[in-house]
Length: 508
Picture 1 (cartoon, helix red, strand yellow):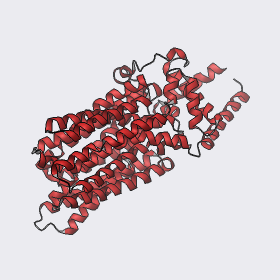
Picture 2 (cartoon, helix red, strand yellow; picture 1 turned 90 degrees about the vertical axis):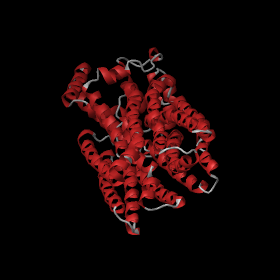
Picture 3 (cartoon, one colour; picture 1 turned 45 degrees about the vertical axis):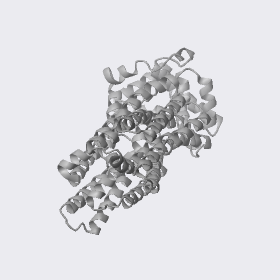
Picture 4 (cartoon, one colour; picture 1 turned 135 degrees about the vertical axis):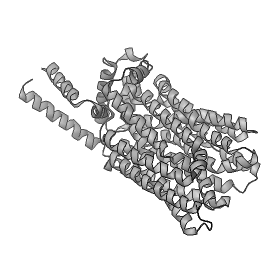
């Protein structure tokens, strides 16, 4: 290759970069609609988290269950959701992203109806188990589908929408708790839990307007269908063709040969072996980053704090149930406000700055909450100012979570795996997320009884300090890079250089 040809290729590459920047400057309305419909699935988990924090107070009194049974009831959904997360990757590789979204909503619908009509603790627990599997499916597939249809310049915003819907669901659950708390005890919690069937039905209907993921279609050799979808989710035909070219090249490299109809029988086989038994160095780095961020998302105790917030403030001196639910609503408004701010600015500031800001803020907020809880524990008068400090600290904790770990975990998990490993790799990472969430939810009260709520918050603050260090050293920035380009961030620098030189040799 002579110098003129090399210069021509460099100019072409620069032109493609300029094309990417200009072509994705706006936000395609159909892409936004698809992202919103897919992300609506996540409202199911948020609603359950919010509504269960209040419903469990009435369930405990109405069904006469113990604190251990409460922990099992609350944590079972999270533990069983790891089953859905693990199965969702293989399922979505087999039947497609779109039908996996339908499956997630249908499973949660069955679970919600079982919970609403459950006459006893065993049947209520069975409903939680079924709903948990549906939650596991939805947590993996919503950000994955959104990432695969989104342009690079808007992917952070669009892929953070699942967290926006989770937070919206939490706030909706708090409002339902507050509104239904005055009903008879044997009816209010059933309505609280059974109403989750409504968004599940709406999701199942709304998904009919969504196309299949173009990247999944390419992996199946259905490039013509992929092009039709890309034309819909792109601003111009030229942009669609450019994105299709990038996807097909990446798929050809990922599968080891050019993508064509002979890949129509590909159903995700061999992925688990490559992820767990024989991973390359780049894949190891990706797995560490994906599992690490999902681990710390739940080790932060955010879900447990939300589930048991009424218990925490009941211990602090607030006894009236409507006042407890009122505190929950304030916390929900704080979460919703800051997750929207994070979503809007995620593509401008990048993943790392907001993630580090959020984790540092959580460490400080949890430390303040620990000190406030310790003070109230040793105070007989329970002064109002100390209770207010604790409320502010809780709101600050969930707000910093919504700035950083909340939305960015879903964004990062769904964008760092290469195409062939993406669905099952993301499912593996999110299954760790759900396992840790379940462990935290099922042990939070027990550990707090041993070391007090204040002691528990100090432990969580220490975990967030470790998380901040992990994020700083192990998570590279992915802002403004296409899904096909993100892989290079985890490759060995010398290997990348060798690959580039090899490509130049083949072109000569």
